[in-house]
Amino acid sequence: MSSASDAKSPSGVSEPLSFQPNVTSSTKGGDSMWSRLFRPFSLESPMVHRFLPKLKAGRFLIEVGDKSEWRQYEIVLAGSSIGDLGLYYYGSKADQAPVGCIHLHSAHVDVLEEVLMVITQDKTWFLCANSGRDASDWAEEICAAIDRVSQAILLQGNGPRSKRRRLSSHVSAVTLKEIQSREPRARVDEFLEIFVRSNHEDVRMQAMEGALSWSCMRNLAWRLWLDVLPLDMAFTEWIPTTRIKREKYASQREQHALFRECLKGKQNDEEFIAACETTEDSLLYSIFKDVYRTQGSMDYFRSASVQCMLIRILYTYSNAHPGISYNQGMGELLATIVYLLHTEQWPGNSKSSKSSALQESSQLTSNRTSLERLIDDEDASYVYVESFIDIQDDTTYLDREKFLRLVPFTGGVGKYQDCCREAAEEIICELTLPTYIEHDAYLLLEEIMFRMAGAFCPEAARASSNRTPKSKKHKRSSKSTACTVTLFASEMASSPLYDQMNAIHHHILSRCDPPTARHIAALGLEPQMFVLRWVRVLMSREFEMAQVWQIWDAIFSLTPSDFSFINLLCVAAVREFREEILQVEDATAVLLCLRDLSDKVDADRLVDNARELYDALMIAAAVEATNGSH
Figure (cartoon, rainbow, N blue to C red):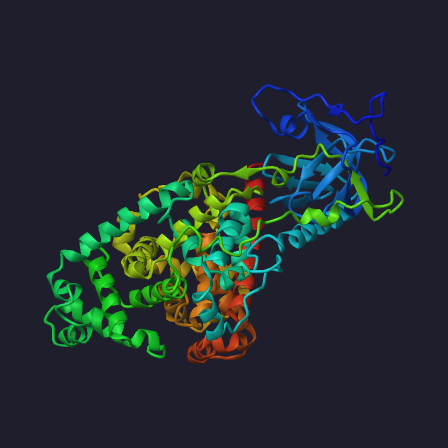
């Protein structure tokens, strides 16, 4: 497609050129997507032409206009960065500039026979292809393009933007050490990429693929998913809200006289541990025994100071929530939280200052620079796109005040002044200070236990089931999670434990793998005999710590309100041993098959298989809902 000719005044001197596409957009209803896309603008002539890589071209009917009319357009999938990737549509092949663009940043694509449904941040687009096969081919190409350009955005490294790495099944101690010692500048980069430039769906999908395994921001993502920090809370409120909650925990802890001497330094940690061994406080002794055995193979948890911290958290929680109190398994949950906070703590040799994260920091530049070169008009591998397509990251700059007013996961593509990076550093430093690992671990445990009440105390679960999420966005985002497929996959994790065990067997396994479910039932093997240990501690006893974190990423991000994704993980684990189970003829042999899960199954594969089950149940739920409405 040829380039437009340059516009000049009679004197031959370039003048500002006003361009208004020949499209009528309604001004009613405020600043609509169309008004933003086709707003008039002025720029110096000659116009700076764009040449973007052409990935696919074809002809579609598109539903456009205020009256939703179907019109035929030439469609070109083009672009190579998150800012310019889109479906550019032309009235005909001869047109030199597109009529409009469907921006694919954070878009989701579905196929309904010959109709492509493209869900963007602004609206849902419908495109009709010639056939179902054609629509499927386009959907695959669009999804592949989105994934390619997204790989340069989420979780960038210290140097040029790099591909997102999938979690290895064996994250080494060296990797964890590197995370712990990561410089403030890199932490700020990660914060901006995850919580500002990416939207919630992007981060959730990447988290399920292990993308957070090389990040220092996992603990902050957990706080958002678990509502420790509400999803609709602006960055400016993160520090004061965290401080208030930390102070509340400190106040609860100080109510217990047995901790006062130790906290004041009048009793060392070893003396406190020795006192726990002979205490007459049955609750304290039960907690002590379990903490002493928790993660015994890890040196970190053999430290008396760490054991004292775990005891204080569990004892304070048990007294603050007498309906649940303390049950075996809670220590495993807490240890997983504490070690993550320890790993991602603010580096001890770095002070929060206005310069630490700004030193050696380079202004993030657009990937588009290398693309804006003049390409021969006859080169069919590139497509010409007029400059009126609005790409924010070319011109949008945020100051500190505007930055702090943002809420997380906005999907913004603007540039940030040094004061914004300074503000981000202050947030990260305050929220990951090693001094407050104990306080922050308590806050996370409290939210986890609210959702896990059914696994430890069914009566308490019923009493707490009426609690509503504090964040409106949290509630809204959960609509796209397993909360929408409760008919099949999510007997609420906060419901009585027996019901949850039966839901896993009868509602999910029986539906996904009837022969295996029937065989297990015929052997008289009750689901709680092998599922209970997985559910109660969210698989934390089955895998190494780093792999447990990945599993929890999937649970927290996909089903933050009830953790019902654990049900699908249990079914996926059973199906990994399908052949062995079907070949044995007694219950004991089945239980032996299901032992030592991590020796036979990688965490990433388990999450992938559970997600496939989740998607299948989502489709089944939608089909049955549709059939039931007729």
